Structure formats: structure tokens, C-alpha cells
Image (cartoon, rainbow, N blue to C red; front, side, top):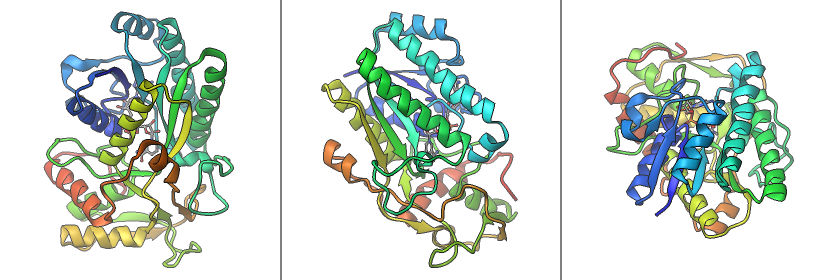
Length: 330
Ligand SMILES: NC(=O)c1ccc[n+]([C@@H]2O[C@H](COP(=O)([O-])OP(=O)(O)OC[C@H]3O[C@@H](n4cnc5c(N)ncnc54)[C@H](O)[C@@H]3O)[C@@H](O)[C@H]2O)c1
């Protein structure tokens, strides 16, 4: 059993990982300022509500609790927002992470799993994407993730901080029966937006249908949030077992177009999705599909969810339980 600090544990992927860590018998503390998280996603006794930029408070928590490792989810996640507010993204995703590194150093804490993103690749030359493909982010969000990855390599060399950076592709779905699910406000992710369009009747916007793909819409690799949580636990165990610093893709290796996702949503909900086609969004690559071979080989990890329909079904089961929500793009 390990004692783990989870930053951003009140958020979508963090709360699922906390759920699975606890089920696996680990002890978990969450630091989250709730700027984008949900209070109801964390047991109050496990939550410390403050911003990671408060280095002193973080260092004193790390010193007193003597964590074995940190899983670092906290950050802002919206690509479009990062184009409007780059300073906010560099402050919250880079400066706050430096604050975490300083607090960890003050407590002699040297193991970290980091939430990176496929956004580090920008517009890749080919698919599926391997970890050694060139990184060329096309947004401040992607740049912020790549900056942290690069800092982690230096902290390994200079301080012996061992880390696993997990480059997630498109997280989706919900752990059945957990009460947890995807509820970003504002929401920018396709599946919850389509489900909200079904619920409200207000059309979702599809950003471009003239891409060089078979049906003209963008293709993405959807990875179920419970499989992502399992990848974090595998990364934690790797580090606790003395494993070296790694950077790994997390995806299924299969791509689905926006139109295929719409079809899956219609099949699961039994309702036509109202939507309209809008212009392309700057920085959206036509295809982003992971090569997850290295993650499977090193950690023995395989996704349990491979069917898009099953992933959408878990998201729909969660969405149906949510009566009140604001936002949506309709
Ligand atoms: N959702 C995806 O598809 C996806 C894909 C790739 C990478 N990621 C990365 O995974 C991580 C988690 O994503 P998510 O979808 O769960 O996001 P989320 O917004 O649901 O969760 C992030 C949590 O971090 C907290 N937080 C943010 N900044 C903080 C700070 N400075 N101090 C304390 N708490 C802070 C928020 O309140 C929120 O609860 C992020 O780092 C994101 O960049 C997500």
C-alpha cells in the first residue's frame, strides 16, 4: 500500500483515479482548489482545498504526511481558452507545477506521475503516433504540458526525481456505479456535448467536415477514464518498484471520426443528435491516434474498453443522473 498525494483529484480523471486507488488499497490525499473540480467527487476527509501555487502549505503537507508518490492532474485543460489566455495557462500549468516540484523537493519526495497530453504532438506527420514522434505543440496548453515534461527530464538528471508522463489521448466515459463522470464547466469535449445536445435539444457544433479523412470529420483515439485510471496505478507501481523515468502514450490505438461518435451516441441514447457544422478550429489536427504499444509492453496495461458504444454508454448513464448543468455549446 502506498500513500499518494493526488493533485486535481476533484476533477474528472483525478476523481476516477482516486476511486480506483482506494479500491486497490492505497491511501490517498487530494489537493484541489476546486476552481474547476466538483466537491462531491471527493470524500471531504481526504480533500485539502488550496491552490498548488501555495508552495509553503504544499511543502508542509508533503513533510507531515510523508507521501510515497504524487499523481499530478491539477491544471487547466481547454485548448481554446489557452489561445485566449496563454499567461493563465503558463501560470497554472507550469508555475503551479514548479511550486509542486519545490514542495516535493523540500520533503524529499521523488516519484511523480504527470498528466501530459497528446496535445504535445501538435499536428503529427503520421498516425499512429509513437512517443518518439516530434513534439510541436500548436497551443499554449500543449506547450505547457511539453514544458513540464522537459523540466521532469532535468529534475531526473539533477535531483533523481523519477516520473512517468502519461500522454492521454481523448479521455471519455465514466466508471459505472461510482457517481463520477465528466462534468467540465464549460464543457469542451465531444461526447458530453453531444449527450447534452440530446438532453436539451439544443444543437452541438461540429468543427469542420472538410478534413482529409474518410467522412471529412476529425478522427480521435477515445480512451475510457477507468482505463486511464488503471494506467496511473500501473505507473505508480512502476515507480514504487524502482522504475525509471518514462513518457508514454495512453490510448487504445483505434481512431473514431466525429460522425462515428455521433452514430454511437444516437445508438446508445435512441435519439437523433441535433448538431450543426461550424468552421474548423485552429490547431485541430485531422487525425490523432496513439500507438500505445510501449505502455502495454512496460506495464502490461491493456484497455478494458475498446468499444466506442460501451464507452458512450457509461458516459450517458452518468449524464442521465445530472439534472442541473449550465453551459454546453448549443
Ligand atoms: N480530459 C482529457 O481528455 C485530457 C486529455 C489529456 C490530458 N488531460 C490532462 O489531465 C488532467 C486532468 O484533466 P481533467 O479532464 O480531469 O480536468 P479537470 O478540470 O476535470 O480537473 C482538474 C482539476 O485540477 C484542479 N486544479 C486546477 N488548477 C489547480 C491549481 N493550480 N491548484 C489546485 N487545483 C487545481 C481543478 O479544480 C480540477 O478539479 C489535466 O492536467 C489535463 O491537462 C486531460
